Figure (cartoon, rainbow, N blue to C red):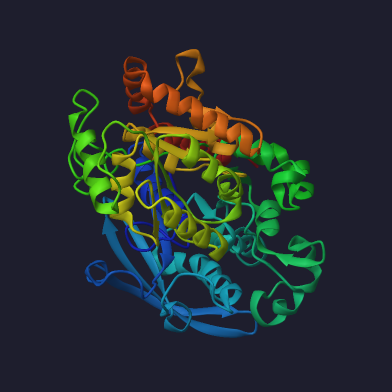
Length: 475
């Protein structure tokens, strides 16, 4: 089977979040199941030069963007056994950053059309085109309207994955004539509540729709989580399924990770104590081994549950003998809050801002408890990474957090959970975790269960392979 995996970001070339992790890992895992999966992404200027130097020019052609034609070049490179294709257009992609530009709709309409136009030029006809999130959501619609009746493209099946339903590619219809180019008689395919909606079109036109956890697949049928797309998804729930993402167990391995202060393993945890001491030293906290350190590595936005943290953190810091570490960036109101709290508790709380991958690894390995109280969480990878490093998650039972973390109250779980989006419930779960930390024998058993949790891509890749084969049999 041949698959083209279309994504706006993929590690190690360029990434801004979880999609890059998935795109950089899933195709490689699929190869272990004899599925030939190739990746296509934009040729961003942010891609490191040492990786650009491995690329080879393949072809160039023009891509129709509504009423005009735009240059498109294609480069290729092989990484970790997987073939990557890069769509080149300097006007659209030679910029600092991946997203957030005034013309993102045009940039990714071009990219979506280019992914399809590219195929004959590289002599690769996939059985399945797998598109991801709003940036590539036009691919199933473009395929249906402009390519499916071409003999060369016949019988290609489209699958679309929703990584986060909040971001849909929603615009006013005034951009259609100049950018998207949908014929008037087919505007209903993209129309939702009077807006042009990229993701709505993908849900309509893809053969299958997947999302990144079983719980999230159920949640997005509910108006509370769907951001108004439940009216489109619910009648088509027969084509929807949820597959829990995985993590790269080779990269995230405390026994070999060169980014942490000292390596350790499930059978020799002595290095974790040094990771904690060195992290305390780096962050200017008191170097104490006899105190639980709670950490967060997060985007500082509301749906990550930071309103609950803002409501209760001062109480926790006053009443509990703990340290608290947070790393991330986002909305100014949350960054300012953590700066304020750091000023109040300078020896107990450290706030670090920005995207700092090596520091994130040091926090995962050096802390004891990992807090993730999300309001919504399609899958979440941080809780899986923390398990890998023997750092016990405290999570809200939502989306992929519900599917990957089970409460240890029964002596069998791998973390601590709470159900309601309520600050008091979160504080109670944190206090249960702190109490567990002081029960040393039980905590060692819990840490072992956490590190034995299998969140590798092996399970997820098998589930995707089953969906692919099943989709090929659909009419």
